[in-house]
Image 1 (cartoon, rainbow, N blue to C red):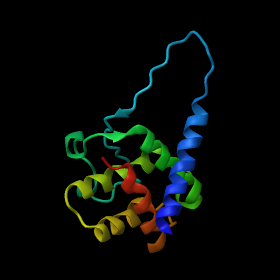
Image 2: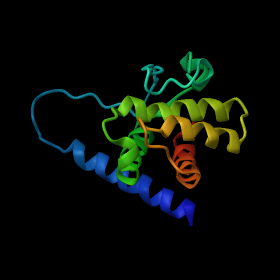
Image 3: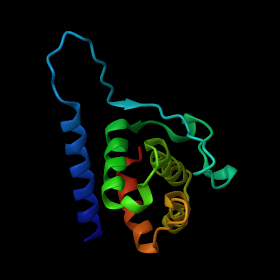
Length: 143
């Protein structure tokens, strides 16, 4: 059931992302990329400890920007209290750190425990169940 809910949130986020792009038939040139190299974000708010940040994109590889955008939309939609007054980069950091950990062989429970800290927003802490659902949203975004 969790996988179905996660897939629905990701799908709705992807649809919302596509709708937001639009097609204005103007003469201005636009550039679209299917994937981009993400640089680690570093603000005091989401820095848990030195080991939770990605130090280079070689550690992480490529994350599809569409999947990353879909995660941000799904996170904002599903967890408004955890996303209030957060910029997209701080929410993207949940994916970046989690994918980095998974690519380094960290087990699911440890990644989920770290998501508890990464998803926290000021005094609002996610429940363990929310952290598990966020984990289910993160994994499809990982390369």
